[in-house]
Image (cartoon, rainbow, N blue to C red; front, side):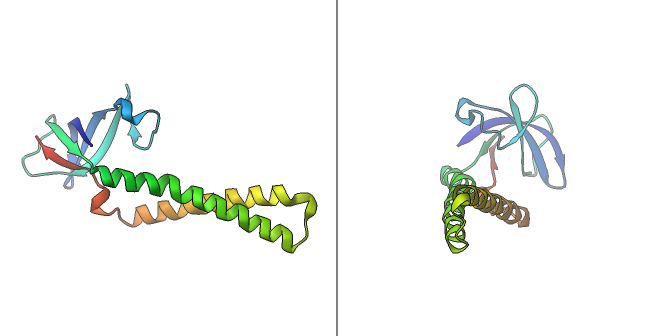
Length: 137
């Protein structure tokens, strides 16, 4: 996926690029949203880059697919594991009246744990494969 953007700032080898959201983005809100339906992304700056330059920013399609799987697939999987764990716990303690409540709480708890794990992993350092890169000025 390639998007057109404009460099708004340069600092410490990083460039902030403002991109107009396209139709494919829908209402995802995964990126930092600016004003007027624009989003800001941070990319590694290249030497000849200046503030105000128009650039093409690319994210590999396979990376987008993997990131989507991580952000949606893993929490969904954890939710189902949590529901089944809640069912097992309710059976162990013979909590007949609270089966559904225990399953729901366990499912939500596991989902939250998955999001915390994803956030922890992403804070430790994003793999260069998932980072957008400037392709052309």
